[in-house]
Image (tube, rainbow, N blue to C red; front, side, top):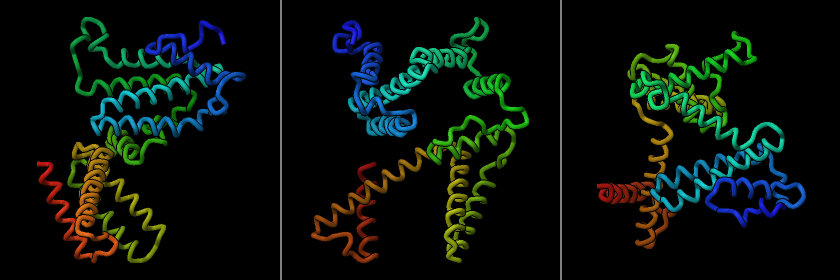
Length: 281
């Protein structure tokens, strides 16, 4: 290793130091065996996991943890960029250039001409993305008749988030309910169909109807301007909080949830719920 490229002698606050660390880890002769054998495919799950850990630190308001998790997420970017550079595809600087150009293009009210600056259109972000997609389609290889409004939505997104994005794209061309009433009726319809499938003991149909119901609920949330992913996360956290409180109450009484009757469990849950509501207020 070149002395000038030794990350232990470089400023640890400089991005170049992190890039040097990754070069050393991926070095085919002196690098780390685990880091050397990784590929885009093997690293991708870690990238997704780190993004969720960033979101978790934010939700908990833990700034010290957020600092660490953002570092872990940045490492993922550097790791992918290094592998791409080794393959002769692009380098970290190209990643930086890509996002800089995108941000400048999407913010003409900040970086544009004198006439453009200060004039913020309500849908400026979506309009800019639409212009980008149009330019990409013009320069792309896919025949026009094969292009779709849904192109570009990542298949690896969380299911609720992907459902919402697909619904928004479809809505742009008018493929949407005119108001919330139709969506709410669709949720009721899917609930009835799920009940029918369950009564017929048709496992495949039940799975399909559960999916249809979830998709319709995401659509309802979208019409109500509610982020389904966030709403479900908060509901899960609330259930977890109250469940833990019920467990604690049972332990204090020398009981186990496993040994309680449904009526006793319901009573305990109501107590935990009241405690939780008092703490919220």
